[in-house]
Image (cartoon, rainbow, N blue to C red; front, side, top):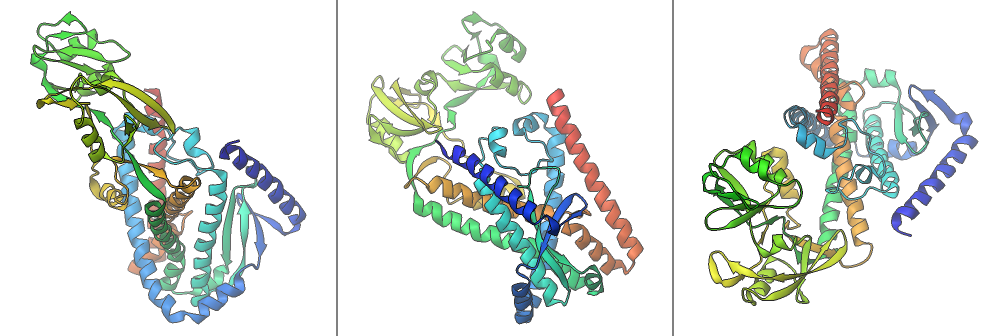
Length: 476
């Protein structure tokens, strides 16, 4: 049985356990809106002790937390705007993403939508991460409440009655009258403390993830993401799939191409390969040139996956791969072993002649560096620099990949929760935070209330637009 089987058993066991617990303690359950809340006094003494013992430190951290809150709010609004632009301008990209813009993070989400660029998300991950993030988030709220003298009525957890009781949420319930009596600054420090704790959690576990990867994974192959290609002038093309083509145009080339497999595009000197989809995508961006694959050994053998050995000689990266290929002459037959989706496959390939030096052997693969642009893209690129894109890594012990994926999810979900929670909308901490900001600037509750409603309604409208264009992207 693979881990998914054990994970489902654990999910069922957890459901039974939590259902029995809630039934036994049903007298302590109370309905509050969409949630059933189970109120306790857990952790209140510790929250009170920390909040009163480290007043100077917490005062300093209040400024840091509020500043972080403004940064997160601004960054999330920027991301929101970019997302709306993406959904409106690029429906094909939206179809590729597949996931609706409003989707709760549930176990097996990447597996359900076949999001291969994300690691699997098990229930085991989910329940531990939800507990970790919720407890640190609410614990931070509580500590800052006690620092500024806001009374805490209870702690506890909640779940949605319309779903199975795995949808848990933690809370620290403040006394509303006591909260409103506190100054605007104090309230903003309390509100931003939860997201600040999530950011610290994300940073901590990202650092642990990097150190774990460096110590637990080793280079074990060369990745490639493209076959060798050239830019070919449209006017130089004389045939498609053995059909002579005078006066070539995109429309004529596409009409002569077959739906499946590679099409042969001929010029006076060479033959190139390209799929019909590749031709159709280029028709929208260029009118004079075609980007065509070289008629090389790799593409003819349909070589796929990370290259881990050449004639049983282990390959750890691009340098070793280049050295091994150059040991052979054009026309030599070699065996290349690759791994893709944990499956190993052997390819027998006859090496070709290097177009730049006919005396050297030629395989015909390449790696196009995925250089990211924009603030978010550069941030992601810098944060992932500990792992080289063109190198395939293997874990040095069995559970390494499982642990690494778990650490990745903790960091990503912590960051996501911090960002989303600072949206200036009524249901998030960012909503009240935004209201207090306007109130501090204008000294008018009416103006603060009006701008709070405008912000909430505007963001709700953008969410509606996202959903509409997501639906349209699948219909059109």
